[in-house]
Each structure stands twice: as C-alpha cells, then as structure tokens.
Image (cartoon, rainbow, N blue to C red; front, side, top):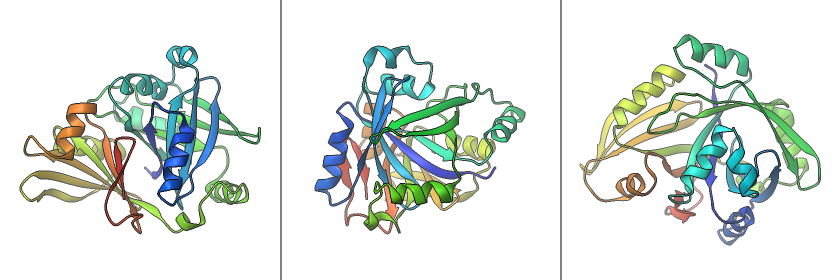
Length: 265
C-alpha cells in the first residue's frame, strides 16, 4: 500500500481559533480552516511541508451528534474525556483500490465518504475518505484522497498564504502512540497496512517498551508503559489508547510543549 501521512486530528473543546492563537504565542502560524457544514464541525490548521495538524471542534452540537461520519462520532465521544490528538489520517492516490485491499484482508469498511469544507474566503475544498468498521482499543486510522494532486494542492496552499514559511522545510518525523500492548497493536497495523517494523522491543530506562513502524518518511512509535507513572500511563488513564506526542524534523522546540493536552516538539 502506497500510504503517506496526511494529517493528525487533534480534538479540542474550545473554538479552533484558540489553537491559532496558541501557536502564534509559540512562534508559528496556524490558520482557521473553515466549517464542515454537514458534520457540524469547524477547524484550524497547522501546515508543515507534506502534512498538517487539524484542530477540530464542534460548531453545531445538534448536527454533529446526528452525523454518521465515524470521525465526528469519535470526536463527540473523545471530548467527554479530554482534548487531545485522537486520529491519524493517511493519504492515498487511489481510495477505491485501498478499500479493495483492506477487504481482501478481511477488514470491513464503510462506504467511501465525500468530504468538503468551506474556506474562509468562501471557496470549497473537496476530498474522499475511507473508514474501517472494525472497532479497536486504539482506533484504526482513516484514509483520504484529495480532489487535487499533492503538487497542485501545496502550490495552492502557498498561494492562499495559509502556510508558515518557517515550517515549509519541517515534516512530522515521529508520532508517539500510547498502547496497552504495543507489540499486538503494531503487528496488527503491519499486517493491515504493510508498514515495516524498523525497531522492535526497544526499552528506554526500563520504563517504556516501544515498537517503531515506518510510513513513508514518518515513524509510528507504539509505546507501552512498564510502570504506573509518566505520560504514557497518564494518556491511557485519561484518554485511552491515543497518540500523545508529535515530533517534527527539524524539531520546533528544544523541549516538548503541551498544547491542548498533547505534546509537540
């Protein structure tokens, strides 16, 4: 499967503009994205060279609660616990083929969802999404195919002045994921999505077990706490199995910074 990291979805209970202001304080430019009118949500965005962070919140509670979009259902559920990074989205050039490959592996998927968002200037951006039906303690990722090809899309984003020049040479190097059983979860993702294992059973200070998978230029680091303390344990206790730390290359900060209950560096 030819997959690349497209974006990470950070669920927040505040107005998405709060994320824009928070990143401004930290020295980086995030922008308001717009409204998903049929889902009752709106977002703001922090772009890097080939991917982005989406800060999504509920704009219309009634519409959001009635949405059949699995991502919006998860947003509603997760926000009952705490803000934080909740989902990972991978980009593909052929969503129909992706669906067929997953089905051949015995995985049931929802029908392909059309997606759209009204930008701040009133223009529309469109895409298609694929979600897996099977439930897992760490939610399976979802997949996106954009209406535009990658090159044209990033050229347009620059022309719209929504990207930060300081981030044009940065990319998401690592996504750290808190798990109850790192090996079991990582092996399942390897089987389903063909991500190779590049580091197995790596233990740091005898307190963390991690398994690293490679997705394009991004590492997915499945982390298991070996004691009852620390950020992994706290994430599992407050939000369950979820991503908790995003590391960029080059790094944005000397030390990890907490933003809406998840960490960035």
